[in-house]
Length: 188
Ligand code: GAR
Image (cartoon, rainbow, N blue to C red):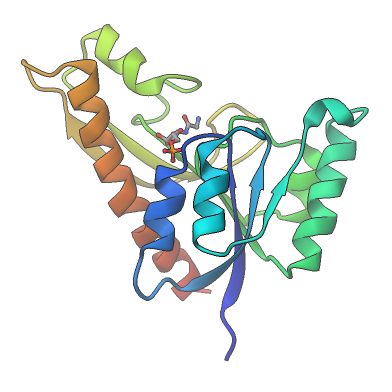
């Protein structure tokens, strides 16, 4: 039986992309990278793994509906049925949400609903909380909102710097995301 095909959407470095690609026995084939930043590090990572990349510039489209339609065309061409956001810094609109309803998942570096949005690790660090973590959730039209699938805590230690905390949070992300992807797809 052929594996489920999935796309990863990313805008940045791509450490989560890489962690997914390095997972043994991943329950899906990563068929496509979708990226909205032509200078993002994740593009070279896709190249390294031989994954085709659809890189788009939102400014070249009249609106979100138009670029999401272009994304969907490319996803359908690659027979993608699931989408995993890994540092994709755009809010999905109804065009994408309706086409892939219940099959778009995001990872976020905080214990949502705490610290949504940009720089969640820095936000938690500066807030002086004792615990932060990682959330994997289905997306909706909000910023880092939608039904939570899994969360893992990360303690903020007394001698943590923002850098040391960031390293530990990323480590948890890299383990949690592939695990949750497999759990989700194996129950399908
Ligand atoms: C990750 O920490 C991811 O959780 C976060 O962006 C980073 C991307 O890093 N996503 C969000 O903040 C979503 N709101 P990466 O490019 O190295 O995977």
